[in-house]
Image 1 (cartoon, one colour):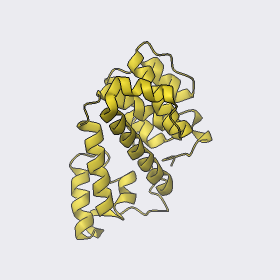
Image 2 (cartoon, helix red, strand yellow):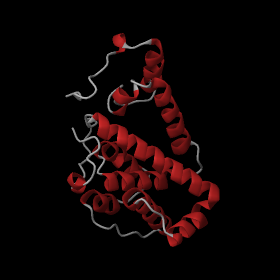
Image 3 (cartoon, one colour):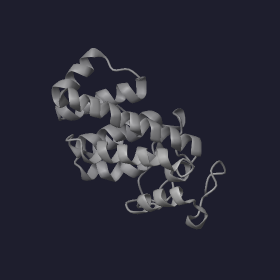
Amino acid sequence: MPSDRFPEMELADLTGTQKEFADKILSFSLNGIKGPFQVMLRAPELGQMLLTLGDEVRFRTGIEDRLLELAILTHAACWGDQYEWKMHFQRALDQGISKDIVEALRVGDPPVFTRDDEQIIHNAARQLSGERRLDDAAFEALRELLGHEGVAIFSIMLGQYALLSTILTVGQVDLPPNDAPLLVAADDKTGAGTR
């Protein structure tokens, strides 16, 4: 069911700029112009900037995909963002994040890590997304792992996902149609994308 806040826009109803933006979305989206895209279509120039930023931080950063997906799932769990959780659940598993870690995040338990890099990424993402801070020890561990440029990229990436979670919350968008299990503790969070 489309959101009452942002009625679903059909391709035939789009302006020229919106149509260009929709064409870009349709070139990669597995979910069409649904989800956050229905909100972003109302401001297509800014939406395009956000897509470009997302492409850069996810696909051209030099940070290992496994670690990016862990950070995204950690962010989704902290924000209670069901939409991003469902979009990245399988990706994280496919990139090598263990089922035990993913399940712990899903139910709100502290994950047990066997890899130091995953512990460092999770700790930094949890602090930034869940506590809105990053203590000195977490910063130093992240800097040692990623370098200063990597820490900057990591911060921008998490900021981009915070922006997406905000868009999802404002739009009360439908969840993606996949079989990923929902976050258990999401009711206590923002509820991003909970329709």
